[in-house]
Amino acid sequence: MQNKLVSLKGSPIRQPAEDLVQHQSLAWLRKAHEEQLALCGELEDIADSLPSSINRQKCIYAAKALGPLIRGVHHFEETVLFPLIQSAAGGHFAETIDRLKFEHCEDECFAEELTDALLKLGSGARVNMEATGYMLRGFFEGMRRHIAFEREFLLSRLPGDDQALA
Ligand SMILES: [Fe+2]
Image 1 (cartoon, rainbow, N blue to C red):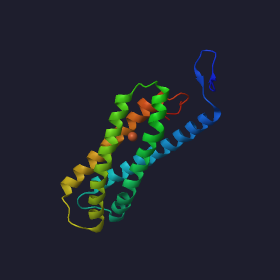
Image 2: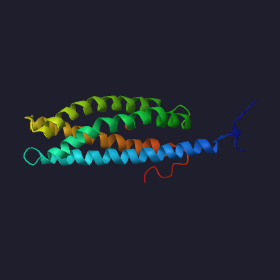
Image 3: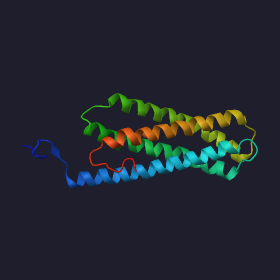
Image 4: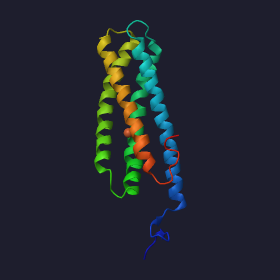
C-alpha cells in the first residue's frame, strides 16, 4: 500500500512536517553560514594586524570559536543538507557533494593548525608572522569560496528555497 501523497503530475507531495524540518534546517544553515563569514572577517582583521598591531584577545576568541563552529556546520551539512539535496536532485550532484565533503575534511585539518597558531599569537609567543598570515588568508579565502558555492549552487536547488541567495 502506498503511503505517500502524490500530486496530479505524479510527483510526491511532501508532508507539512517534512517542510517544517527543511525550513528550520535551512534557516539554521543560513545563520551558521553568517557566523562562519563573520569569523572569516575576524580572521582577515587578524591577518591585516600582523605583525605589529595584534589584538591578542581577538586571537584567543577566534581560536576557541574556530573548531567547534566549523565541525558543527560540517556535521549538519553532511547529515541533513546533503541528503536533502541528493533526494531533491534524484541522485545528481554526487561528485559535487563528495568534493564538498573532501573540502570539509581539509578545512577541519587546516582549522586545527590555525587554532594552534592563533593561540600562540594570543599568548604572545614567537611565531613566523609571514607563514601565519599566509595560513590565515588561505583559510578564510577558501572558506568564503566554499560557502558562496553552497549558497549559490546547492541551496538554490532545494524545492521552495527562494531565500537561498538572500
Ligand atoms: Fe560546507
